[in-house]
Structure formats: structure tokens, C-alpha cells
Length: 74
Image 1 (cartoon, rainbow, N blue to C red):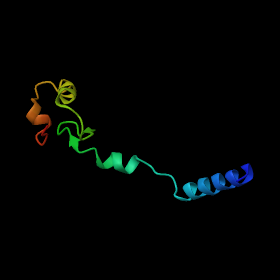
Image 2: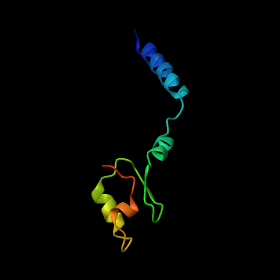
Image 3: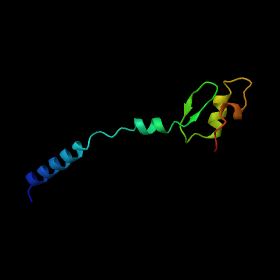
């Protein structure tokens, strides 16, 4: 097999991959924003840890964790 055939195969492979279209992560990320602060309505990814939420909670003086994030389980 010559180099011309290899180049043609690569072009065909790349054309097939390009036909699939761009795969965007935006819709998946939007669905993953499942933790929401009930005070300010800011959303967080579902993989967030409690210490990060406690740091956010410090912005809301006088509010406890269960008031800000009543549905958080983690």
C-alpha cells in the first residue's frame, strides 16, 4: 500500500468523523446543575461537596445550612 492510499484512507476517516457533528457538553452541564441555594437561587453542579456549599452559605448571614440547601444529600 502506497502513501497515497494511506492519505486517502485518512481523509475518508476524517470526513466520517466530521459528519458526526460537534458534540457539545453544554446541555449535559445544564442538567447537572441540580443543587440550588433557596436564598439566592444560585445553582451548583450535583458533584459539589458540602465544604464548598458551606463557603457559599457564609454569604447569607444568619442562615444555616438546612435553610440554604434543604434538599442536599451528600
